[in-house]
Each structure stands twice: as C-alpha cells, then as structure tokens.
Length: 356
Ligand SMILES: *Cc1c(COP(=O)(O)O)cnc(C)c1O
Image (cartoon, rainbow, N blue to C red; front, side):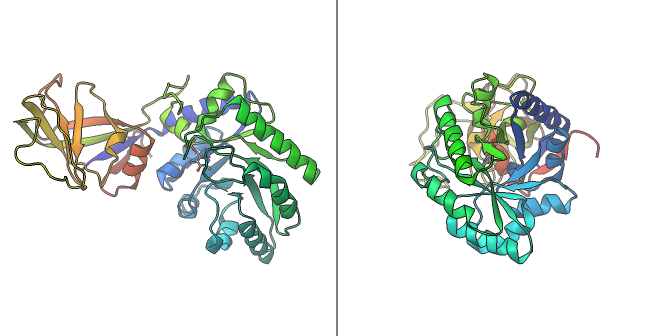
C-alpha cells in the first residue's frame, strides 16, 4: 500500500523559522492546516512552532481537529456559506467575509447564542478570488459597524491564488492605506491587517513589507519549506517533511510509443508520445485517484514519470542507478497539490516519522 511519511518535528522547526522571521517585523502567523484535512498532529506541530491560531477553509476539518483535542483559536478562511452561519459561529473564533448579507446572518446567529462573532473583511487587490472591490470597502464598513453580533477585527486580502497575482510593496501599501481608512471610519485600530498567504513571506524577509501589515495566514511555506513565487527553499526550513512511497508492481522493457491506432486515453484526452526508443518501464500501485501526477517528483532524479491512469503510475526507470524490480519501493517529493490529493486518499497510509 502506498504511504506518506510526515515528519512532525520538521514541521515544528519550519513553523518556528517562519514565525520568528515574521515576529521580528511585528507580524503574527496563523498556521493554515487545510491541506491535512483535519490532521490534529499537524495542527499541534504548528502550535508547538508558535503560530498564534490555526486557519482552515472547512468547518469539517476544524471539527476533526477539535475532536482530537486541539484547543487553538480557529480562523475560518473560506467565506462562510449562508446556510452554515450557525456552525461558523459555534466553531470559529473569527471568519473571513466579503458579503454583507452573510455578515448580517452571522451577527443574528451570534446574538442568539449571546456571543459576538469576530470578522475580518476581505478586500480583492486584483487576484479575483474573494474580497470586496476597493470602491465598496468604506460603504460596507459603515454598514458592518451597525450590525449587532459581529465585531470587525480586521482587513485582509488574498493574492497568488486564482489570478497568481504576486504580493508587492504596491499592493501591500494599498492594503495598509485601506486599513487606515477603515480605522478612521470605526474609530479604533484593527487587530488584524492580514497581508495574505505564503506568497507574501518574501516581502517580509526582504524587509519591505509595509509596517501596517501585522498578520499573515501561512500553510504551504511552512509545510513544504519553500517560497511559492519562485519555489526557492526558505532559510531554516526543511523541504522534505512529507514524502510519498509506492511499490513497483511491474517492470518491463517496452516501446515508448503505444502500438496501434491512438484515440483517447482513460481521461478523454488524446495523448501525444515522443519516440525515445525502447525503455525500461515500471508500474507503481498509485494512480490519479490518490495523487496529482503533476504534483509528484521522483526523489531519484534519473527516474521520470510518464503518466498515470486511475490506479497505475507509469515511470521510466531506464536510467535508474540501480536495477528496479517488482516489490521495490520508490520515493517521491510532493508539491502542495500533490500533498493535498494524497492526504485525501484513503489508500495512502499516513505514517509519522517519529513514535507517538
Ligand atoms: C489557503 C489559504 C491560505 C494559506 O495559503 P498558503 O499558500 O498555503 O500559505 C491563506 N488564506 C486563505 C484565505 C486561504 O484560503
């Protein structure tokens, strides 16, 4: 059975490296655990690395972490659905929002419980995922001010996701200016001026993040130890806290181009093949049901991924430094998408590198 090894001590160290580098500039970190689908040990490793809260996009994940004893403050990252406002108020200490109707519903739900729900308003600085467009910000802030049951505690933005927009001094300064304007309207300072996700870390490390930004929500860079924008390793972080292993079920010398008239593959695509002559091909017990093959890199650089169907991964082992045989185990490094898919697969066993 394929398995994923998780080195929680490396995650603690990576977290601490990111938290320390940001603390120096007065920036708090919420550790984003969503890729782990509610894995409590991962959240616990982030907390040991001194993140100030745990962020997740799904209520189910937060419930799973809490059920396993994680007592952190939870930040709900995906904007709440109208149908789930009660669960949001019950589950999350703070949520990210951009729709006034939903903020009203959150407020009503919180009041019913005799609580106040904290919200961060999201502003879209160009990535075109969630967030208010800049011209609606102040009218919405004025409206939110009058909604009982909710307290506006922050202004945030998200970049580098849908549109791949890179955080820069320019867009971060815009966020800082907007936060200033919001503070003027509400007459108090905001607890969170949240400058985005992992993709904002390089600005912090190079010392150019505007000082008004005091919070980031970081997942990928903590877990994989790399900058998102250029994939460069982050100083003090390991890049291999996660590793995927799968077993070889067939090794044969076969041509590099299929024999016969080629129509569509298992996923309706018309595949194209380069004729590289005969090659030594291995099949592994892993497929698209378990992994995102674009998110997988063989640890041995001489092994190349050729493709995959639902349950079979095919690799070229012609240049492998040792003879690959059925029963051998091959190791892979993962990117974020690759990690997410493995975490979701019931058929990839998760193993800790250390005893419980
Ligand atoms: C997923 C997510 C994050 C974390 O992103 P990383 O790239 O993993 O650091 C931060 N904010 C929001 C709103 C998210 O959805």
